[in-house]
Length: 277
Image 1 (cartoon, one colour):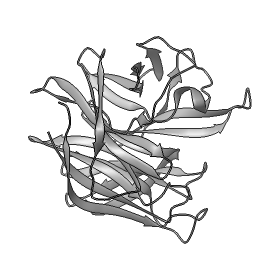
Image 2 (cartoon, rainbow, N blue to C red; image 1 turned 135 degrees about the vertical axis):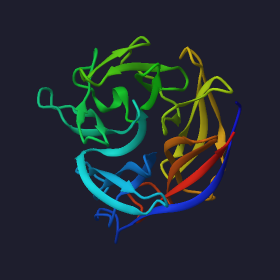
Image 3 (tube, rainbow, N blue to C red; image 1 turned 180 degrees about the horizontal axis):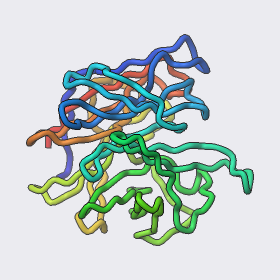
């Protein structure tokens, strides 16, 4: 699988505000996956600052809002499927009470039960924001949950136990994690026909210019492929893939669009695309 094509289906979630520093009128970066006969997902609500809240959202089969509810403090959440239930991952930036450093807490939200799990990460008890970043890629293999911390130039992988709230390194841990402009976006899901895990990331050409791209990982979690930029329904600006799911033989992704970076923009839209393999 060398590349894919994105076909725009519809825009489905909109957020606006009077100016930078002001609160958006609804959540930004909305993304969902189907559950039963509706959709569950997450969005980021606030003024695009460190005080933002992750909302759990429920949409009907036409992607119209049914309900929203505050879930936990955090930012830039993504939705993924684990053990048959939609979950959200988010990162909460704050000052460490022990060192005073600017750190992340990594949080998983069960969007069916509402349970929030804060992860404890082996070898990184107080994770500074620059060490592990915030573009983790969920992957479920043999009913076990993994997070790919970096996919390019080399794979960096954690395996996590939500029941124990713990994560262990699959690959060797280093504080000097090398992350290129090709970064995480959606979870990785398995395609049986091609025997590959695939998803979509965002490529940060600069703060106001993000492009979607394909990434794949082999079933043994040893090798990754990073593809070229993909065309979307927008000619420029920020395009951040956030969730991916399969319905029958079709694959879909939610991508957030804004004309400039989140901190400066006054409008953000989430769009649904079909992924053509």
